Image 1: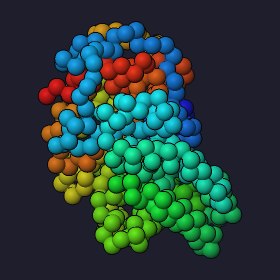
Image 2: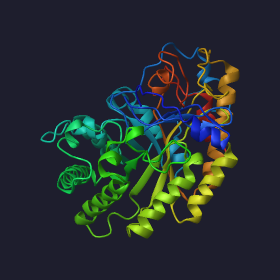
Image 3: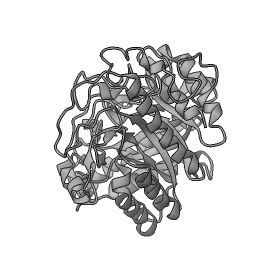
Length: 419
């Protein structure tokens, strides 16, 4: 994810008694906030830039310390993906920079990829008449070459939506709304037709739930042109229906297991998400397969208890869950409520140890829920390419991933390998 505008969620978090830290989903877009008792990070799966921020400064060499097990700091000849083959695929959000500078890590540790930005509408479909397939094709070809699968991220999002998509459309006017639906349908069909062979799940709709506690859907006031023009959540249905139809047109039954809704602060928004899924099923006759927990976490929030509670709600309702954008920031800028940026920290051995413990706790939870988890995807690979280096504080070095700025394994990697 790249630079994004931080959007306050204080009304939601105040009601719930928790506070956000930050969210991450994609590059160059608004940054929604995860809520947590001591702060939470959020990311998006949408954005405009092609590469997330570059970290300023190294990790001081501590990333390859000994915390978390015997692999930390040593030569890494084993495979994270192989270790988890009996549990779920292990993914990473990538772009050109990753597949050109971190090929060895990707091939060794991951068996699933997500385009961090290259499949967003504004990036891949800049004008109605033209597509820019280049970067997405390179990622897809890399996946095909190495026997990996992709997440199609994302077919509809309120950010990184090009102006041409809405040109000439008037709210409440049936004829021009049909024009908008036809444009969306054509875009989704083009995406599915090009990548159906390598994409095994689609983030069909991203971040449509309101950040306001007493409001269900993100509307025009919260930046959704889709809701503003449709005047309701109806656009969500059409996106899922078009995606299902495009997949089924390729082969009957081929949409099964592939249709996901993706959201940040899922522990806070779980009930709203379930209400959306129930509306699709009961009112529109369309059942989707699962939800993505973006999971831009911090060192203490959300708790594993809160995560388990949220996962159990979706399991009980019959939906799968994927961890779609995992990273663990070392900062807690919302720990007291209002945003107060923390000063930059040094990545000490103690901090590396504590972060490794946090990752270990999360993966213990994930393994426990392997029956319902369909994948776990990191939002990046190494700390020199993370959106958190520029959000919510520009040019503040963060250390949220499994590899350090020099692409060496951190204690966190060993921590999730040793169980």
